[in-house]
Image (cartoon, rainbow, N blue to C red):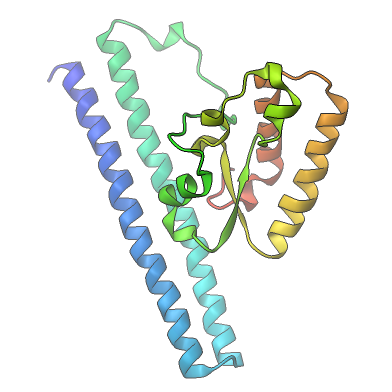
Length: 215
């Protein structure tokens, strides 16, 4: 089969996996929510309900991990399609060095409604997380010469889900806030890559707490 057709089939597989995974995860997440609601009605807010809530919470954590694995699988298929496209064009991977694994990056958002962008991609996390920008929105005003665009800032690749509650207060409102404030104080001038590099550092330090995790 021609390389170009292989690339098209891989890309279709990636798109199909993404759409079906999101649909399935959404249904399962809704089922968990309904199960928790019904348990509260039957058991009341008793110790028994607390035990059920804990188990369902653990199941939701596994959903996050599955979401990450499926997203990575779809990305791997897409990368394989890109590789086949380059082979078809006679370009070898050796001519373009790979990006740093796990490095923060920008995409291209179709809308500035970043919450919708995030929850469209991770619908089962709706109501569970606060959406955080890896490279903060205010960076565009602080460093106008960095050339940041709304499409980049609000792209899915630049969004992180921080669990609501104590985790959000600790990670989003405290540690990340202090770290970025220190970065702004120490860097009068910063390039787009400088900002991405610092976002990567934050992902390295806190990425396991994001939902879905980025580390």
